[in-house]
Length: 281
Length: 332
Image (cartoon, rainbow over all chains, first blue to last red; front, side, top):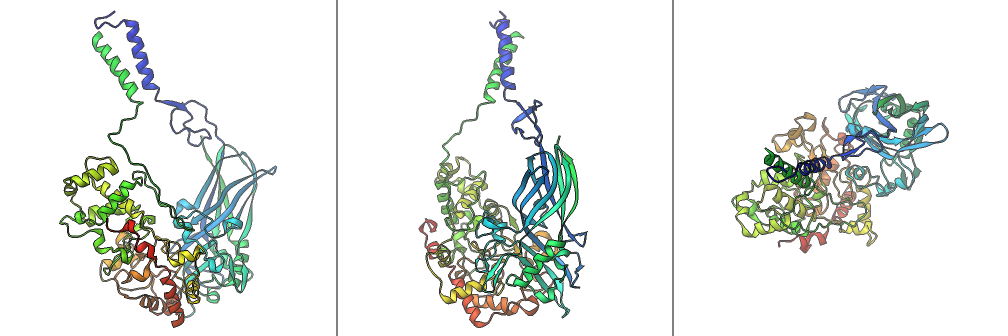
């Protein structure tokens, strides 16, 4: 018993309780945000982190293999149109990595890319299987239930990508816009807007599926990046070059232009640049 | 020493316990409500982490909207320039207050960016320069703010938040066109023709005036002028100081557009016919013009008189009488 009337063992117990109660608000758990079992509230790592693979698609905008200079770059396509690029917005869907042995991981059901917004140009699927990846596949545009009126969440981006109902409904697959120098020496606007066109003249769907081989890349507990280029020059290049003089300033109601762009797009637009690994631990 | 240690232990025990106990609130927070817009393709009414919608908050915002107390000298309220019968616009050159809660770009030059709460902060602090002392001296308002926000001191953000809550109820989605989309009515042949012109590259209105809000939350240069004599004419350039943004203005909504003239940032056009005539033959081609402006090198989309009339007829289908007369939005 001391002067304040508390026995030493009691005092020690009180101190222990108070320390316990102070420390009891600190949680233990996995503190690595890359882990499957990351606990945001955990303040002390307990060694339980379970790290699987991440798959990341990085889309790079190119023109004839050079980085796109949006708004400032001057380019000439295979049809000899001198042009500038001001806006590129597009959707890829069913973005999927295929592993040896038949397993596949869908990285995204669909994704909206805006060349002026870097945050939209990369997407990551977390906590996927480890293994050897043979290929990456995706759809340019959208099909089925995704490509119909109001199918996507009503965000500003998706609303602005709507393809009007009187022309078939759903969404623009791509808006690729800028200015070109016409044969009349005047600057003309161009709007390469692709989407499923349905009108009294028929139906044309410029959607296509692409496979990019990855040659069995072995993916461990890392963030595996796949850099893919959309080379805008490729839209103009093919057996028949796309000539802005021929197709004018808007092609949403032009079946022939939609079909030509599909054909060119399947061959020369999307290319795998490289793959690389980012540590997660 | 021993006494001091004992007191520290007891204090530590108390501190340890209280650290895990949430503080008590001083008053009851009103029940949150949600605003439902039941129309195809309409976005959800945005939520704000600090400003949950409540009946009391909305009612307070409505009262403030119509009260000149926001003005330091009590000379004008929001409703002085934003009349319900004109879709909350007026003959003054103002953007209508309709479906504004969905925006993230405000004012003609897009200089206010963020949520409607951010826009209202600008209105309270910069536009009106509201004298908060007057609100805090009002027993009526003190009670209403206490009920809505559980505060004893009214700050500018509380005023802005209440206004923002009311704005989130100012939604128009029951025009004839909306009823047509919901298959509740039909359009005339001329209106259907106008719809096709609007929603195709014939008129190419839809790329900027995207349905169902009939705006795109972006700024564009539509070839209205090549020289920008006033600061107001410079548009988005005022924000970025990038010459490429000269003459870019926020896309105004076309909901109730037949009632919201005069048109353009400077009110240069009195009628819809004048606006369509401009987009047909008056567009000025220039470096900054938006690529979406079809046939700018020829002055515009060259609609003939019949197509112009059809487009005007279609634009009239965007008039929402139920919004213009909605008693929940009127002066309380």
